[in-house]
Structures are given as structure tokens and as C-alpha cells.
Image (tube, rainbow, N blue to C red; front, side):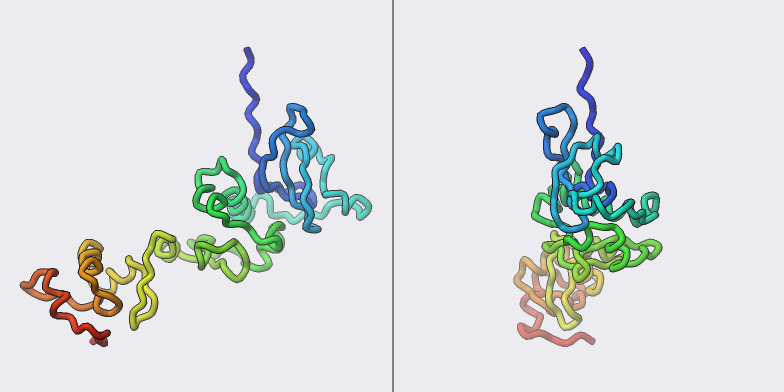
Length: 224
């Protein structure tokens, strides 16, 4: 008995004026896969995968009298892969990272439904940097995205605790590094009820961390 045909994941791919958003079951009760697509005009349409691949469906219908589909020339570039990955994380439940993005309600803004607009807003990716959302609970959009280093991105995960200090809002990792102590020691200080700049107090030679909460000024001391 023949096995089931594996469906090619087309999430994030662009066909003419259509950008594939996610799989939508079968197309009109056939064996052909159906895909929800967003047109450049902003409307959405369910299209058969075969129709997309064969070039039979290039728009929601709004462009059928406007001549040939323009090409952006970015298909084989790294920036195009980044743009596709952004859509896959947000709209493809089969993507390993979906639960941290689309599963939490993270979406891509309508303007970035085209790779041209994404490149216009973000520019080319600087060497060594990755796409990062400033607010990890908000969407992919121009005002919430930046190119960041791996360290900046790691410090910006939603698992990080943001702690206000006189040096600004610091992540747990940044605060431990600035204080010159281990993360274990910082956890201990937090468990003792220390806050803000109290967490940045220098180590006490020959004294245990259990004594810190009684020796640090309850106010917010300045650092030397």
C-alpha cells in the first residue's frame, strides 16, 4: 500500500502578489493541500497548493488586469530566509518554535507581508546580528524590531527578569555580570529580599551571603 504523500510546507513563501500564511486543510474536497494566503492588497484567500506552484493563482483577483507580476530578486538571499522564518514561527504550527511565537499570539504586521517592505524598514542584516523583537510580547513590526547580537537577544528573552537599578533596567544576566557575582549568588540575594542597587553590593570578604541583607543599607545606595 502506498504511503501518504508528504505535503511541502510553503508557509512564508511568496507567489506573485500572494504570501502563504498557513495550511488550511484540503482544497475544495480534493487531495490538493489548501493554503491561506495574504494578497498585497491586504485581503486573504484560500488557494490550492498546486495552483500556486503552477502560477495559476498569483493574487486574490485584484491584480488580474494589471499585467505581469513584478519580481523582487531576493528569493535566494539571507534576508529572504529571515523573512520566511519570521512567518513560519508565527503561522506554522509544525515549526518547532511556533509555541513561543504564533502559539502565544505573536503575529507579523500587515506591512511586512511583502519582503520588499521588510527590507525597506529593516535594511540589510549587519554581519553577526539577528532579528530581535524589543518587546517579546509584541508583534513583528518596524517599531518593535532591531538587529541585535546573540548576547542581546539572549538577554531579551521573556524568561529574563528585568530589575530596575541606578544603572538602568538590567536583565538577570547583566546584573550578575555587573555585580561580579555568580547567578547562584544573585538568586540568593533576591531570595533574601534585596532589591535594585542592593543586589549590586560588592562581596563581603570572610562573611556569608546570609549576612548581606542585614548589612546593606535599606535605601538605594550609590555605587562607587
